[in-house]
Image 1 (tube, one colour):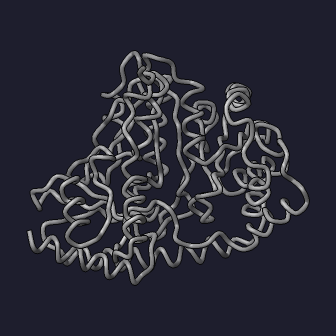
Image 2 (tube, rainbow, N blue to C red; image 1 turned 180 degrees about the vertical axis):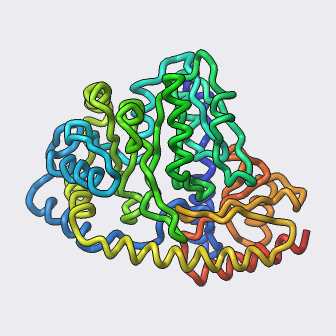
Length: 387
């Protein structure tokens, strides 16, 4: 017997497998510095946990509406309006099991077999696999460090074919930390509208920005763009809620009901009491986000200071998220060899750039303590200098 073709063509998640390997080594007592994790190392804020625990104590453990409880959809709608300039009614919000699930559902709802989806590289490693699951073809557009890893309108136009259905934009980006400006988004939106191409905008890192960089939701740039954009977001990164699996889709009205129907036949609904925690995240105090961002900013600054002193490597200053994408072409190693040897010799875990569509790079996540940041980057320096 064989598995389905759609499963056979998938690549396993390298970031999750490396994170698991690093954690397993640590459990064995090995002094591993894990720069592979894509999750905050902070605990979920107390008021969010208290809300979920209160819901459990109150017996809020049954099915909810498939698209989420009304209270949460209203809170998301209000947040999008006040913070992002996006006017989505609660009925246009679909609460999902994480932002990854939101992206997958959005793609499944609009992409047909034979369609093409444009994905700028370096990309978050799950995007191409989601497109493949929909029976479509990912069309990868390689961006450059010289352009801060951003796809240009000209590159966008050149990549379009009669089969192009969607482009995926991720700002702030994983693994690059890139943030598109309002003008850059407007230029890309113009191309998308000319060619009637849908935009999937992944904004999960929107609250993690540095040096005055501003996040802009592309759907806020006009009615036509709004009608052609699917906005996805979630609670995992800004509120340290990765294990809660809480995300959402904000969709134009022509799509929202189809997404609701799709979810009703897959997950039914997201965990009931977790939704109460998400309500508290958006409606409660926001100092927790500011505190976490401040600490990430400290680590980011220190990582860059130390990386600048290491020969044979370079990087583009990340404006958002909690990653640095390091160019290792000067070492002569592939990204997989670099990460394998680094873990073996120096007990430092990073994700090879081949997973993100750029074999000349490796991704460092500074979602770990300052002590680990300094110890880990020092080990990287020792490793590179030994080559």
